[in-house]
Length: 222
Length: 76
Image (cartoon, rainbow over all chains, first blue to last red; front, side, top):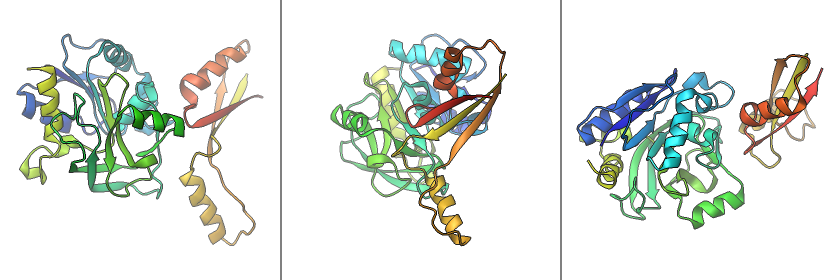
């Protein structure tokens, strides 16, 4: 599977994602700079990393969502290419409108940086097929603005359509209905605040994040 | 021409920063503050013939996130 990681000024988890993708797919991803306006051909996954793109100016992810390469990412997502946004990448995806809702300042105003327990809500998506529905996994979070917010109608729709991929199994940041990760309607776009790319081998303290990438590889094909 | 765009959180959207400011005001001994909501001010210097529609589009496409925020435009 050919993959790409988008790199914005201020991204700081692009290398973590690249290491995880290479470990699982056996191929180093293409690192694509934000100023490019074209993606490599034949991608099985486009990943948007964590960090502080454009210094979080205006709103987290707001400027990145309007960068030239993200226009190409939106077009690819609409054609069905899997797109995965972690942390700041999730914020970027909501800012593009590919995913509903918005990520606001954590309710307690603290930067939260620790392992959290997540419940897998939907184990049937391209990203989550290697998990069991209802399973509890441990994945680290590191964010200041991860408080997921959407109107109750949108939240009901997300729940009804099985688009809540992961939910916090503990209080983390004040997110509506403890939502940690959401899918788009077509199921090819996932955004989540926790960092599965930081939990892919025993040396990381566990490999609960690895199955996300393995599941995707299995779905998309080598 | 100067244009001022005021971006505020929609009513009902929790404003943790406003809450913190509210608490801090109480800590300073200011009584009678019922609520605090924070927002953002963006000042634009635009060509005189910039239309309302163009400014509105700037707000909708970038300056405000209409999922959680409202905006108000003031021409100065």
